[in-house]
Length: 244
Image 1 (cartoon, helix red, strand yellow):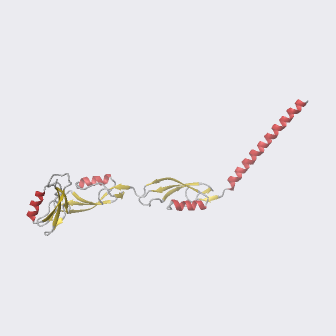
Image 2 (cartoon, rainbow, N blue to C red):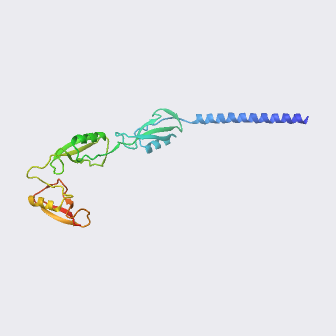
Image 3 (cartoon, rainbow, N blue to C red):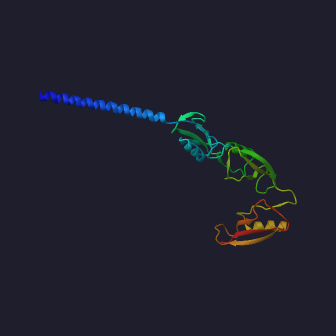
């Protein structure tokens, strides 16, 4: 008899646990549904054209989140500015929704190639390869560079710029006409060569010595002004000569 009562008690106890578990599950489900339905509907604000800081402030006031999806080059939009968003503005979402944005990296940075010493044709190919364009073309006499060779460029080689920027060049006209004196390139040549040139053109020179240079004795290691500078008749040219 006591055994039957014990079995009945266990069954009642298990039944009670099952009822309590069911009630708990229903309560949790009801609470979750209530929490979901409690969240407000929010119209997604327009973030395009805003900075990430501005976007974060706008979304925080509406209980929405922000995630940077990525970045891409865009010459027309300043760096750090939002290009597009998902979900789009005007769409209704629940509080707590994460808004993903794509940000501009600005224009693509390009390093200016060295065009000095190249022909016009070679320079055009080099510029196109680097997504750059040829700008103004000027010319001037040159002793250092052959005719139709680039002697100067702006911006200079190594400078940073953006895609499709212009690079202006100056071409050599070859040696100057009579009456125009250009500074030759004497670096690596002998002092004797300087003396012959200066005496012929009545150019005053100044000689400075460099005992530390590894270049041969009486070799020009530096000059002022630089090659192709136009000189006046009363110009004074300075040279540094190796004396080792």
